[in-house]
Length: 274
Image (cartoon, rainbow, N blue to C red; front, side):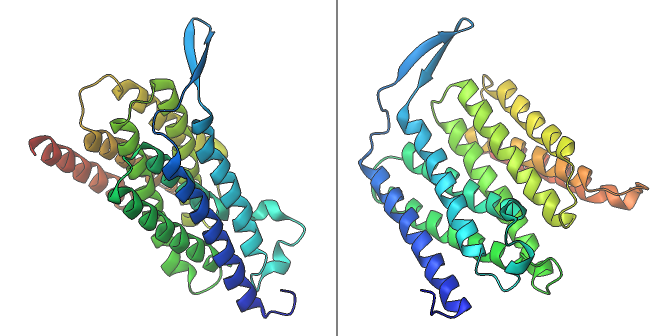
């Protein structure tokens, strides 16, 4: 592989990473939807644990490693050789896409729709991987085109995850952790792309914790899964739009979050009437 040109090496590693993920995803077909659980009592709460629940996290870490391996072939790799932590923001969305895809595959019935979801998940991960590879250089011309694509894909993933969780039978504390985790990383990557790496972790934490708390509050409400997903996704978008506002804050800068709020309310009403 050392004799390959940089572009050929990138394609090689890209293909190997996707093929590895596809193999593990396909293996999920043989795993039962409701695996045996072991439980323990902690502070008066019954905490259930399942090995199956750890599979999406393991695949997410596998994807993160594959991302770093692929990004090491980038033409501007001299900027991050020896400093792999610089690449962490670029591994967020592909890893999260892997986590969400595996979670959805575990929850779905084993039929033809399951295989369609597998195909869509792999295509989505591949598109995100390619886009993240292209935005490794913030000064490149492709950045202004690919960055909005990554942001929209990130929120689409979050919407899929929240709808899937709302439709599942997972306990509230499990959903709280998953939504906190996903909202944190989506907010982090969105703010990072919109502000070209200038991210403040307290702002990201506020976005993640707020979404997780709202999700916990809505757990016992009689909302449709789509309604719940729209509320959380819209809330996360509004929070990130407010975070990226620069001082002085003027009326025209508030147009985006206000428009999103109105659209969110209209969508929730439309979904409730259907």
